[in-house]
Amino acid sequence: MTAAAAGAAIPGSDAGRAGAADFDDALAALTGGFPADPREAAGYYRRLARLLHPDTAPAGRTEAAPAAFARLTAAWEAWQARQPGRETVTGGLHTYVLGPVLAQCDLATVRSARYDARGESPEAVLKIPRMPRDNDLMEHEADVLARLRTVGEVRHRAYAPTLIESFRQRHDDGTEHVVNAFAPLTGFHTLAEVAAAHPGGLDPRDAAWMWRRLLTALGWAHRARLVHGAVFPEHVLIHPQLHGLVLVDWCYATAAGTDIPVLLPRYAGSYPPEVTAHLPATPATDIHLASLCMAQLIGDRTPPQMRAFLRGCTLPEQRRRPQDAWLLLAELDDLLERLYGPRTFRPFTMPTAPPA
Image: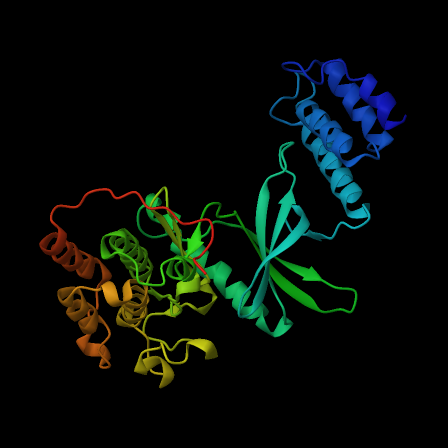
C-alpha cells in the first residue's frame, strides 16, 4: 500500500478519538512508508501518531498500541535519516535533525535541532564536544544538572538549562562523542551581549535584577555543595522581558572543597587566586567571579558605595570574601534600597543590534 493510498484509508485520522477500524487502518498504513514531500510526510506522520498513540487507542487496542507506536516512531526516524542533506543524531530518547550552528563554545559546538515526540516537532539545542577527549566534561555536566534537580525548590530549576538527555554518538571511524541535548532558551541574551549593547556601562538599577538572580542561582548551586567555577559573561543568560536568568556551561563545576577541573585560558585574568593556584574552590570563588561580571557590566556607572561592595566581594584572600550567596543577596538588597529606595519593576529591553 502506498502512503497516499494508506492516507485515504484512515477516515478518523483528523477527528476525535479513533475507533478500532481507524486504528487497524493506521497500523496497516505503516507498511506504505511516507510521502516524498517533507511537509506532507510530517503531516502524515502526525495523523498516524494521533491514531496509534497509547493515550488515544480505542478499546480493544490498548495492548497493541505501545508496540504500534514504537514501530511508527522507528519508521519515522529511519525516514528522516534517509533524507538528502539532513544530518541526524540518534540518542536514547529521540532522533535529532540537526540545524544551524548557534555558537562555538570553548570545548563544544552548539547546534539547533528538531526531534519528534507525540506527533510534534519540538526544538532542541545539542552541545557536541569537538574532541572526544572532552567527553568526560559533557558527562560531568549531565551529572551536575541531575544533582541540581534534587535540591532546593522546584522554581530554582529555572536557573539552569533543562537537559533532555545525554547520549553517546558513535562515528564510522569508531570514535564517540557524548552529546548533551537541552531544551532551547528562546529570547535570552548573554551578559556579554548586554555589555556590548551598553558600551558606556549598564544602569545599576537594571543590573540589579540580573545580579540578584545570579546570586540566587549560585545560592542554589552551593546548597547542592557545588561550585560553578565558570561564572563568566558568556555563561550568564538573561531574558529581558521576563527578567529571567539561566546559568549555563556546568561542565566546569566541581564539588565544594575541590579544585576547578578545567581553566579557560581566555579568562586567565578573571579567576581568583585560589583557582590559578589549584587550591580548593568554595562558594567565595563563584562570588568573586559573579561580582567581577557585574562590575564589568555596570562599568563607570558604578556608584561609590556599590564599588566598595564589589571590592569586598573580589578580595584576593578567599577567606575574607563573602562565603554565602544568600546572605550576600540580603546585603545587596539593603545596599540597593539605600541607593535607590524600595525595589520597583523596571522594564528592560535589548536593542536590535549593538551600537557601532
